[in-house]
Image (tube, rainbow, N blue to C red):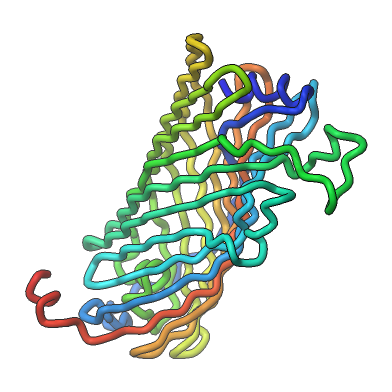
Length: 333
């Protein structure tokens, strides 16, 4: 697998990775059930929105021989464009190279990021499907491996050919029929009374990681299936403002197949995946906006006793506007 190949290579100036996360548990209490006319629906409106997000996304390998190894992509700031109509939410995200945090290629190398997502809300179900592609990483703690390295003037250790492609999705079910998860996910509804709900979910992903080493080509395929529970709470502080904390934790196996120079290695691990966050939103019949912050972690230990984790700190400012849907679109739906 990549970790086995990367740790020895880092000692000599080169090496690559495997994805994973960390644990956090959040608790809150579901409030009483009331009529769902407390929910305002905007599903007949066509809404466009944009997210400005800043991410700290790092892959951490803790090896007894090498120590901590932090692998990061050079695309801290991302833009995501969204379109909402009826039960459907479509989005496209990428990381422009001209934005601050994405433009120091001389020191950190060139990184690229692309993501497509579809969110659907049939009844009380929540369905997400996504495709994500990341390429180009650097070693954030290069100084631990190169004693003469000077931060700010010397380039970081880099893996420009390391590429991670993930296809995946999530299926959840909202247990409280009077809680609007859509008011938090795609803002096509707005809740007038404070509510919360448990949301059991199933998460599934296929990840393909590839990297060109000096004299070989490595490829790792990962299949993840995890199940667990989330809790979401929508605290309505005024008719137009809310605060929404949330947390979820899922567990399950990861199956992987690693190929390097014709040699094949297979194994499986138990993975812990957890998320916690907070959202502050503002809503009118036309305009909506808000900010949110979240932490997502994934962690496991592999056959070589390496502790591997993927931590993502995610901050977002979002804004959107609702329009009357064109007649052709209404007829189509």
